[in-house]
Figure 1 (spheres, rainbow, N blue to C red):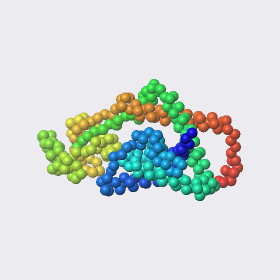
Figure 2 (cartoon, rainbow, N blue to C red; figure 1 turned 30 degrees about the vertical axis):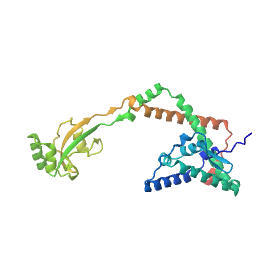
Figure 3 (tube, one colour; figure 1 turned 120 degrees about the horizontal axis):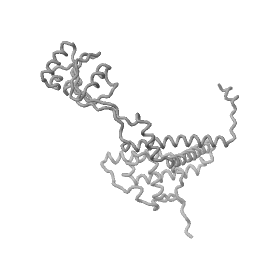
Figure 4 (tube, one colour; figure 1 turned 90 degrees about the vertical axis):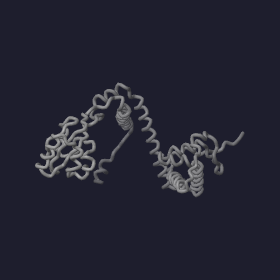
Length: 301
């Protein structure tokens, strides 16, 4: 019978990939600097073939794919262009791991304590994840629709306007400009000619899209009261005297359910997950024998 070769164990899913990240990013940077970015096979293309051997351990396409999935998205993008080099990183990790075992680091009390903490964290995370998966299965479309209908404020597009203005220093100046507008003068041309707002003057007084709360109370009250195409009377605030032209006025509206369904689903799932996990923990605590030394806690205070 052929002796089965050991493969990289699942521990690699939980070991820090800082070395891999640094190596891959460094490789990508060097390739960019020399204009040499190879177009290589992606990890998924290797299947479970043996890619390398380190003493009695084989590194398979499966191992490479798992290591790839542990990386942040931006590093994955670089790694796709450096698959062969990334295999070298896995080889380096294996020889480092074997050396750590050879010198007995796995028997070090501090190292063992840290490994136990990692093991605990992984198990807790996986248990919580499975509770979340069950919570997802509990969500039904009718509940999503109810959430949408009872939380309209979360899916409302705020009232907004697009406008232009002319800023003057005195009421007399503002009255003179208002008279010219009533006589048919072009608003944008007048803004370029006389407005004291240096930021908007060159673009004919044009402002960005505005929501309530972004301007002075006086400016907002007048501007949001106008229909599209209307020009305000003289509006005074701390900046001076304004004449406002509203180009477009869009009232607040609730986005249709179809447009926000993914967001609604995520919110409902999050609510279910939180509730389910709290109930699960409460039940575990109820079944456990828990004793708290309140006197010791009081002494610490």
